[in-house]
Image 1 (tube, rainbow, N blue to C red):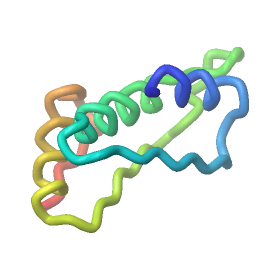
Image 2: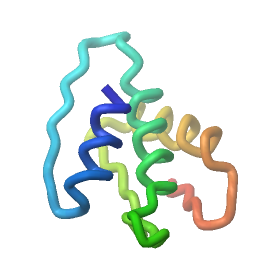
Image 3: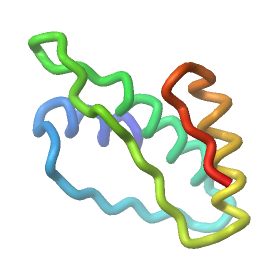
Image 4: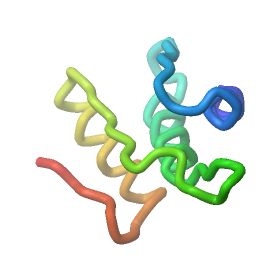
Length: 84
């Protein structure tokens, strides 16, 4: 699923919407974190960053904390902001 999203973003560029559905216990946090990480490191054919920002939004407090921890593990570098 992540590879399909990244491939689509690489070909189609910015400004598109995608809906991904997951069942409980299916690895949502890892999929979201990996997708966010891959999008943040995606470059176009000219060598320019395709996305200057990747923002992850959730409506669940527990998932919010879990996602922050997972994303932070993927991208422990300058430019990653932890919100509390």
